[in-house]
Length: 297
Image (cartoon, rainbow, N blue to C red; front, top):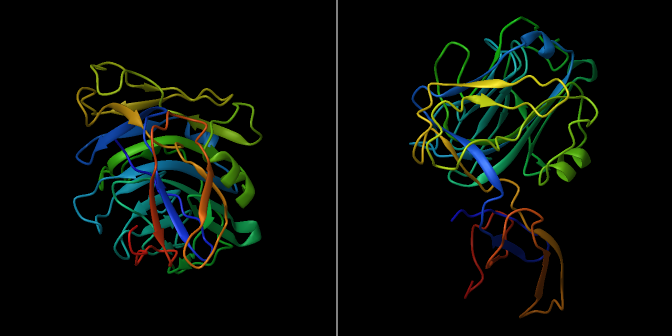
C-alpha cells in the first residue's frame, strides 16, 4: 500500500489517500545503482524541461542525493543540500536554484524543472504547483547552458557519487519551456511519443514488479528518438534495486466542496484514471500545510 497526497485549498483543506499500482517504477538502492542515458548530443540545447515522479526513501531528510546530472553543474537536480526535504536545481554553471522543504520522504511526488536563459527563466513545480526558487549561485538566470558530450546520469552525480535511494518513474525531457498548465495537465497521465519537443520519455513499465529481472537492464525510450537507457549495478531481484510497483500518477482530482457550513461540508473528487482505487481516507485541516487537524479528522 502507498499513500498519495492531494490538497484542496479553500477554507478547509482535504487530504485523500489512494492505493493500487498503475505500472512499474525503478527502485535504486542509494549504494551504486543508476541509469545511464547515452547519445549525449541529443541533450545539447539552449533550454529544457525535466520532469519525473519520485518516491524518495532517504536515511535522513537532509541526505544529499542526485536525481540527474550531465556533468559538473550541468542539468543537475539533487536533494537537501540547503535544508531538510529540499531540492537544488543546477541547470548550468553557477546557477544554484533552491527550493526549501518541498519533498515528503516516502510519498510519490511529481517534480518539474524548467530553464530558459534567453528569457532569464527558471521554474520548479511540485505536484503541478510552482514553488519558490532562490538563486544562491554566482551567475544570473541568463547564463547559457554549458553543452558537452557527457551522458546523462539518473540517480547519481556524474562523478559516481551521491546515489539516489528511492524510486523513479515517468522521466521526461523536453527541449523547450513547458508551461504550468502543460505540466499540471500531463503529470497524472502518460503522454504520446509524438508530443511536441519531447526528446526522451521513460515510463519504466518493464520487467516483473519485485520479481527476477536479472538481465532486464534496458530502459525503453518511448519518444520518437528511441534513445534507450541502461541500468547499471542494480540487483534486479527483490523489493529494492529492481523494477517495482509504481503509484506515481495514481492521484484523485479534487473538485470544489459543496454544502459548506460552519460545521460540515461535502467533499467531492474524481477518481484517478490510473490504478484501482479501493478506498479513500479523508483528513481535514484548516491550514494548507496540514499543521493542525479538525477534531475528529
